[in-house]
Length: 85
Image 1: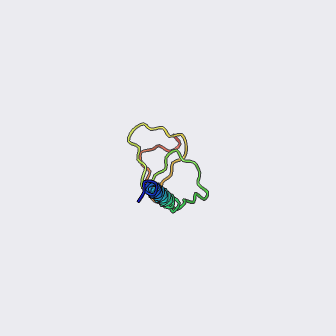
Image 2: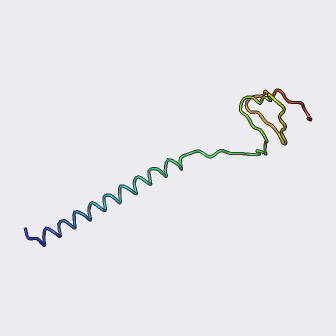
Image 3: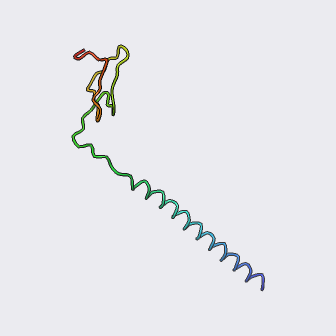
């Protein structure tokens, strides 16, 4: 094998390695983006603004002042607040 043929084969091998690396990077990026796209969206329906929104309960242990609505769902416990403040 001549030096010229060896250089040509070396360049071809390097180019093939570069193409394989590029394909691997694209596959990795595409795999990650599909996982993000699979997350379900949350429908907010007729949601309104809340100053405090909890899943189980809301408890005031001190002199808290809340300016706005409070909400609990699916729970129903709200304790330690004076209504109408």
